Each structure stands twice: as structure tokens, then as C-alpha cells.
Amino acid sequence: MQTRRNWIRSSIGLGGLLLAPELSLSNEEIRKFNPRPLSKTIKLSSNENPYGPSEKVQKAVIKAFDNGCRYPRVYSNALAKKLAKLHGVNPENIIITGGSTEGLKITGLTFANGGGEIIAA
Image (cartoon, rainbow, N blue to C red; front, side, top):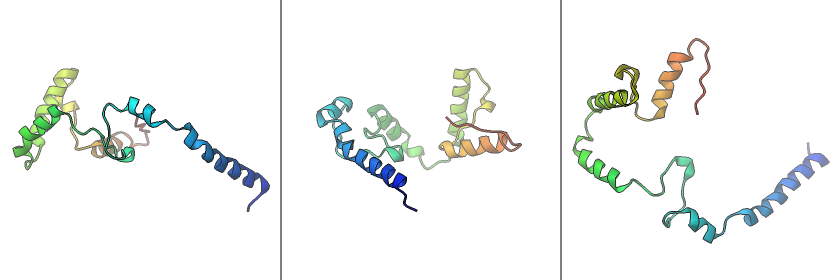
């Protein structure tokens, strides 16, 4: 039901939208924040890097290209050993996953199955 109070609230909200362009940055100010010009819109909702991989990453991808058709388990064991040494833990305490979904699912099944709480940050 539309009441005067609801109408006033929605009118104030819509009026605030009219001010939004005045609160945005100018093109000159935007250029100060961008290390190099971008050719198109940045999609922040998809976790995309607008600058792409660095030259060092590109070279590493090219170097590893021939092994891209293999299952990564052999390589993840070596990575777990290096990470364990770096952080002073046992390699058995490190789990390598293909993205965060698998790791979060494993964490939930392991630690929250008995009624605990997990906070992701």
C-alpha cells in the first residue's frame, strides 16, 4: 500500500540519484588512478584483471603450455612441499585446489559438519 511516508522516502531516494553524476570523478581524475589507458569497461563483478597477466606470467604460461593437457596432481604435490617449507608446516597440512569453491567446500564439510560456524574473509 502506498502511503505518504513511503512516497516521500522513494521521492527522496530518486532525488538523490539526480545528484549522482555530480559526485562522480571527471575523466582527468580517472586518468590519475589508471596506470595505463583502458580500451573498454572493466567488469569488477567477474573478478577480471583489466591489465591482463604480466610479461613474466605470460612467459611462464608459454613455458608450461605443453603440460597443460596433464592432470596437475604431480605438480600440486611439489607446490605443497615448497609452500610447506616456506611457511614451516607439513606438506600434509596444505591442500591445493583449483579455485576457492573446492577449498571452501572441503573446509565446510570438515569443520562445520558438527554445527560449527565458518567465516570467510
